[in-house]
Amino acid sequence: MLKQFADYITYDLLKLEPSSHVGDALNFLIYDTIKIFLLLTTIVFIVAIIRAYFSPEKTRKILSHKKEIIGNMLAALLGIVTPFCSCSAVPLFIGFVEAGVPLGVTFSFLISSPMVNEVALIMLWGLFGWKIAVIYAGTGVFLAILSGIVIGKLRMEKYVQDYVWKTKVGEMEVAETGFRDKLAYARDYTSDLLKKLWPYVVIGISLGAVVHGYIPTDLVVKYAGPGNPIAVLVAVLIGIPLYSNAAGMIPVVQALVGKGMAMGTVLAFMMSVTAISFPEAVILKNVLKIPLIVTFFSIVAIGIVIVGYLFNAIL
Amino acid sequence: MEIKVLGPGCANCHKMEELAQQAIKELGIDAEIEKVSDIRDIMKYTISTPGLVVNGKLKHSGNPLPSFDKVKELIKSEA
Image 1 (cartoon, rainbow over the protein chains, first blue to last red):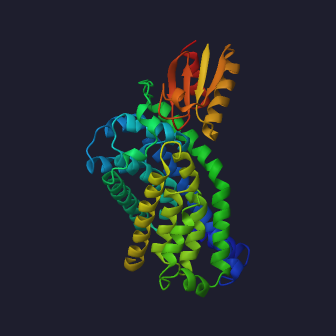
Image 2: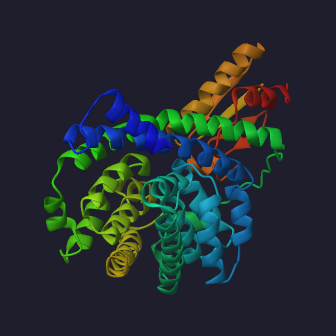
Image 3: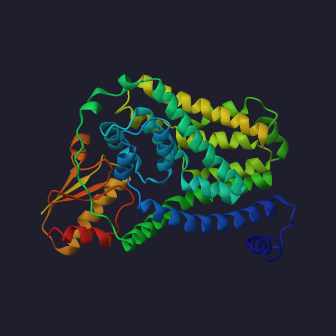
């Protein structure tokens, strides 16, 4: 139905040729913009309501003193639904450690939380189909669990800043909110998010439209297609220092895939951009010593590269 | 009335402070709003910022932020 609307505007109303660059680009633009905004609004709202039932405090209690492996699995799953502001990363980390949450388990949480975020999943679903979104979420969780277990086994507790172990957390409880409050939170959160994201989505889709209509297939396939063995490595390395919201990036990536970029490389790139970033490293420096930060990033990066190659081979 | 806004200084924490300031203006309450950014002081109350403390009681913590009406309600409840 959306496709028909986009087709109507581009080919009937504006009388553009179906195989022209402009026609192609505009068609893509209209169709994808509307589809993505519809998906974003509904799903972000639903997820926000689900998130309103979770809190870092509750998660901290659940994970406190959990054994490894079970703890890692719980942490990775909770990372998806626990709302937290990245500004809260330091107090949250300290709070988890203080409550006896094992270091590796805390890392599982910190990895899955930014990587498996609902905006990325919505965009992937909208543009590549639900199977890709599920794969991304599934491997993201798996990666978070495994990395957390590995880091835990390395016993790097001594690379946590010393003051962290000595900080005491207050036991303040906030009153539970009613369903109507949760609805209000969800509504405000959704509208704020859309207000923040829409320029990125539009720019991202426009760029995607340009790639769609104008960049020849051979160019992309040559450098980022399945035939280039180092594409995954390059993609992950480029992604590490970057941090962008998933919204803006995915439409570009989709256009590239349409032109032949390998899907595994795409997934690896997205994971790399969201899971690890320099801004995050800077924040973490407050609680972790450099060797641990480097270890953390390296293990996750290696995992992502493997994921990339794996899916290039399978998909 | 003493109001504290807890947060190390991100966009959300600023928004929380703005909401609090607007709220006391509309409610006509005479209050001092203190911005707390030291991690150790923040953690006396909560592990998730931004936080809102009214007369020593934690009324809100974390994401997402409460609506403006909710902020007024939270502040009024300690008046």
